[in-house]
Image 1 (cartoon, one colour):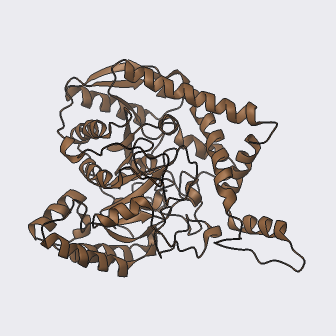
Image 2 (cartoon, rainbow, N blue to C red):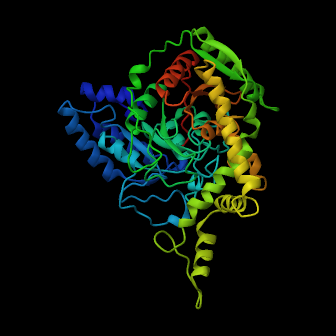
Length: 495
């Protein structure tokens, strides 16, 4: 078998079980692909020694016949997950040289299941960004190109390295995190599948925090079946995370029947934005028709507080970030600035943070500190929290009325060129999250499924939003959509 790195999780698992291939062979194929893909800047800390050691152990485990689904499968880990003895920088200069003495719960669960870690993946600094242009490692680059144009495109953010690596077949799957769309938007931009589970489904312990009430880990994979396989391993109760829910984790893969007859799919009128590209509008309508043809009932619904979601998000997320990032001060770990004679602790804090945090992180920390300050707490932060409650209630009302899932676009456009959205107007960049932030504010599961190409040959995704804790049902609806859409396009190799 050649090109083993091009396999998905399910196919590779079946090949491993059948004895057609070994985990070492799979891993070596991925390591070779990674070494040839430095132009994508997706892997920022390569761990070939760890990978091969785990692959050998996985092969032994598979021989005994007692191996879980993820055993022996090579994956990438986003740089936001702490990995013992391996740099875990959250793509920030301020965490330079930080090698944790512990493993995040999610990456530990994957390791315990026999998954093979190939290395750490690029991302936006502290997961703040929608284009992977705020990373201390430099930009991650999408493997996709517009027609014959050589311009480098964004793989999306913040999980840009994960999206690029999966789309370019550098790994079989990758972990991502989603605070306002950071799994679903890059998945849509690169033609892969990404699911954000219900808040509390995956442990946040050991994941560098951005906004604690919004962050959630999830898998980024080549198809829906692979997402079901990997999500099952990543989920589960964790006593170390107070927001982790004690709920049994079902066999998500077994729930993929593709049968959605009688399901009610909501189409929210508020997601029809002014200036939305005709291609996105058309794809959305086609997606609804596909689900209808599969036996679902399409219902027009209203989520009236949607228009307030983006402003509410960009008050709550920076507020939580300013609180979470206060721990980076140059005292205990990470980078410390060079101090001049006579500098005290205040100067050390100021200089360390000034040179350690990038512009976007500084911007959000300042916004967050402002909205939490004495005179503005009620005017901004408390008001945003009230709006969040209303957004959550909109979804609860719709689900209470019998809707099983909601279909929306995943992004307002296809991938754009690196550097095309300038820092001069950060709000333009924030608008990328317009279809995704509501899901985080309400704590719901959401999945992006590749459904078509735009005129320039770039992938476009559709988003399905599910009921809380019903990821299995959501994955099955996504499976039906994926089957109907028949998306098989891959980027042409130029790197």
